[in-house]
Amino acid sequence: MNGKRSLLHDFTKGFIEENATFRMVIGMCPTLAVTTTVVNGFWMGIAVIFVLTFSNVLVSALRKVTPDQIRIPVFVILIATPVVIVELVMKAFMPDMYSILGVFVPLIVVNCIIIARSEAFAYRYPVMNSLMDGLGIGLGYTINLIVIGGIREFLGTGRIVLFSLGSFPARLLFDPMAVMLTPPGGFVTLGLLMAILNLVIKRSESKKAAREAAAHD
Amino acid sequence: MRFISIILGGVLTSNFIFMQYLGLCAFIGLSEQLETAVGMSAAVIFVMTFASTVAAAFEQFVLIPLGLQYLRTIAYILVIAGFVQLVEIFLKKTAPGLYKAMGIYLPLITTNCAVLGVALLNVTEEYDILWSTVNGMAGALGWSLAIVIFAGIRERWKFMNIPDVLKGFPLALVSTGLMSLGFLGFAGLFQGILK
Image 1 (cartoon, one colour):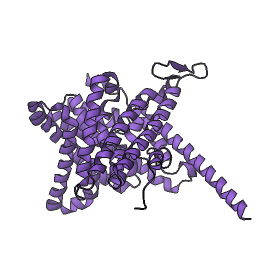
Image 2 (cartoon, rainbow over the protein chains, first blue to last red):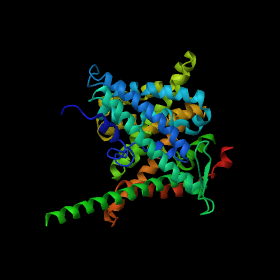
Image 3 (cartoon, rainbow over the protein chains, first blue to last red):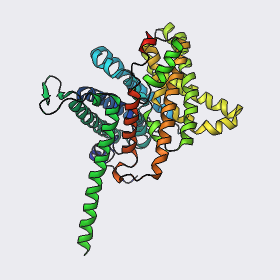
Image 4 (spheres, chains in turn purple, cyan):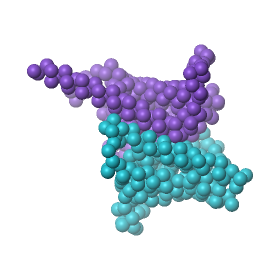
């Protein structure tokens, strides 16, 4: 390996460079299923951060003693452990949220983000890097969930409820569109968000190319 | 009657892709060609139906007698992974032709959340072994219907002029949304039969 990797970069790359939803397009099911409100997206994100960090650290710590051929089953068991912890803690302390997120809490165990990070990152790099990677990718994912949840909640109900901070009303501007809270709304929102992101990236790239061409002249 | 309502429910009113968001990664990833979509569908129908049976049997004969229901998630994922591995070995030995057609999709199925999802939903719905199997099959049929229709649509994109920014995933998601809007029309259709 090329020397010591920067811990800070391992943390921040999860936000944009290796953003799970928009750049790698993995972990789609919960991204769409739980993002009807900001609060649901937030708690799902917290659960994923916990599981991802926990499993990354375990996989990384055991990477030297894990035989190559059976690494996938080993990963699955190491991932299932924190998932069961999250499931039981949520059931005990937040039964309402647990019933809203429903089957998607235990399904974190087959979320491709987690196994992809075990395979692509934690299995190769030291514990501290894997810890930062887990936190960074998890946090990036949480931000995605909150943004998508915010858009759907705002357009679907006409307001955004932020825990006990009160809600932000928008009923004066437009009538709420209930379709945004249904599955079609979720698919279309995510698709259009991705298209907008592509447009922004393309614009900035062509600007950069134009600037470089101008510098050459 | 219950049989018909579960099957129709799984295929139309509570379709796994369009209504419950399960198995989306494979749905988006493997729907570029009709042929792969059909191959994956066959594998999913087979594995999901019997994985539901195996998981329900495991629940009834192992987890409940031992009082270990709180370990359900971890137990189910191991049971499903083991079952898929077994199917793979069995097919390789007994039906090499079928293995060639389905083989490459089998490992993908372990991490398809629809398989674990249906096993966990069967527990919430309190289905016994027989009805779990039926529900698993219904879910798999619905999933297959969705991916085959979608692959047909995607094949036509080749001849279309699509804006650059929409190419690939964005357009796939928007089209899925529109199809899902169509399936929303089935909502409540079988409520009379169900109750």
